[in-house]
Image (cartoon, rainbow, N blue to C red; front, side, top):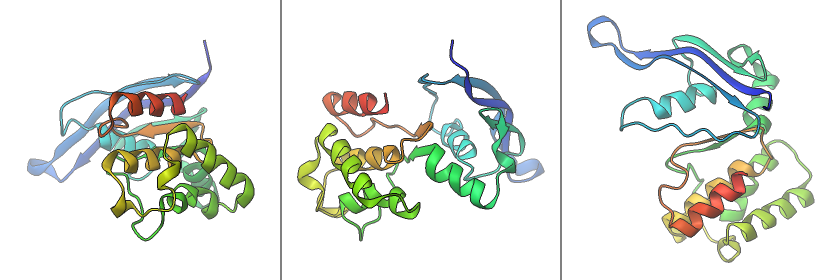
Length: 189
């Protein structure tokens, strides 16, 4: 049994006040071990994206804790928070969040560029991911010039660029055929 990578303790998130309050999360608790895949399923509006956004430190929970390797990430600030977001976590957004004025290759390389990684090494990693995800032929295209599945694979490659300890993926295979979906899951492994 691996060690605990992520632990969610009594996580709650509410929006609004009193009569108009909406509880997006109501006391969610679980653990994720190193190397483990965890799928969270539920109907639209059930809080799945809110949970991922709390783990990613994009929104603050109303109550509860998110522990990464035993450390409460809500206490992270400044450089430590930037390090966590840029190096320790890979986030695959449901709507991809690609930058339209950057090519596919530039979108994939963005995390490495932001964190000042070695450019040659980053380019090699980008090419490895592009080959694995069968997208070498679109690296010089812009997001508006590629299909939804290619956008999703671009976002997957970007999320994996810095070899994060934790990957959060919001509907990671939603726009993909079964072969491409299997490649995405394989890339996560």
